[in-house]
Amino acid sequence: MIRFRLIFMYRGENMVYFLLTGLVWMLLLGRNPLFMLIHLRFKASYLLIGSLGIQIYLAFYTLRTGETIPFLLEGAFVALLVCFALNRKKAGIPLIGLGCSMNLVALFSNGGKMPVSSEALRQAGLEHLTDYSLASRHSGMGENSFAWLGDWIPFLTPVGTNYVLSPGDLVVGIGLILFMLGMSKRRTVIE
Image (cartoon, rainbow, N blue to C red; front, side, top):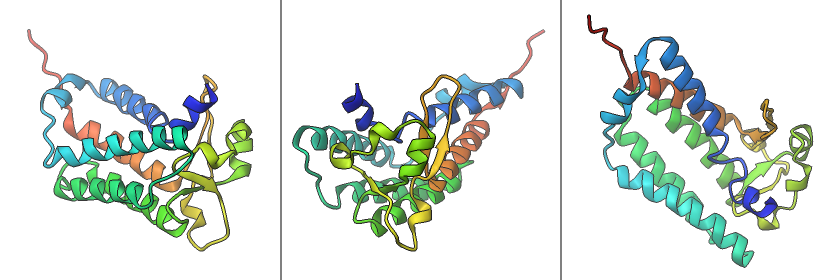
């Protein structure tokens, strides 16, 4: 279970809470969430799908071999940024791109791995995840001028699936909520 948790450490799972927040907000505003799914169109969507696929592959590869592939993760983030730039007129996408850029700067400034605060892991009850040898994309937080862009914000959930987020993750999450709201339309009442 710990190994599986390390694969998705701080990525993907925590966005579920932003998705749920966006969904609840859409419903409270009387918007139809299905409209968003039906009318979702992205330019160069293969970049988005390919980037996410590369990130999942890297996680499993590192878990299996204990090695990382230099610059592949950064390349996946660059592909995401290109996709977001092509779709920048959609609601929330500029914020998602900004958050992704912040995470990319953190990666570049830390040798290709996201710096993570041990104190934040402790506060989130995740001290067992401080063995970064099994993590394809994380390392301990060092001293550099971009350390504040790393994962240092404890995110505690009511169900105990706690995380540690970066400022970029928060910006991506807010952008995701705005994207969901911008893509949904008000329900029409049939009389």
